[in-house]
Length: 237
Image 1 (tube, rainbow, N blue to C red):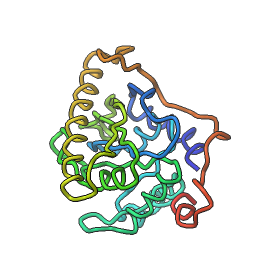
Image 2: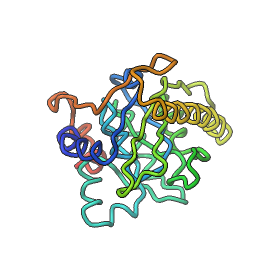
Image 3: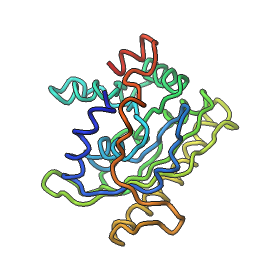
Image 4: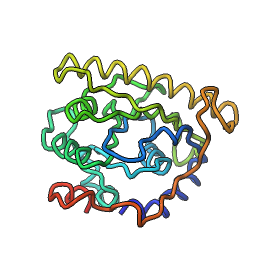
């Protein structure tokens, strides 16, 4: 339901956080992939989702699905639960199925919000999905630290070029190396996002990434349920 829900969610998001994205043209137009983003504030999921031209099927912590209203909204937007701090094979299997069918999974790769204002250690979950399914990772740097409902500060999102991790071995060592590469790129994009805010949101960044606001793809071009797959239907229904 996100292609329709974003028309309600995005205006509220940008009223709460007057923000822009950069490099939206770098997001894959089609095919499966993983969006790997850092996580600094509660606004991040709707902010990134509203600035993405593709529907993102988020891996979200399981505790959120038990919360009134929030759990329903997450389900409507196609999010699916992951149990933090333990190997959740069902969630990883579902994420792999979603990207295999040509859709985008969104992962906040540190596993939780970072309390010190900068990206933290990248965990291997997103790398496992991308390496095992041989799909690209699109890094997404988010600068939103300090945002709260009482401090509606501007934020920024900078999309990076898709990263092909297909040559990485399907092993713990390969996932660790992939996480290091993605972490380096996320820190670079996060710094760019912070500089964009400080500069008053220029039209383009030094690397040529163009500024954009919320994206509203025509609903008829998006699919609320990725496919006839039963497990994916459960994630998006």
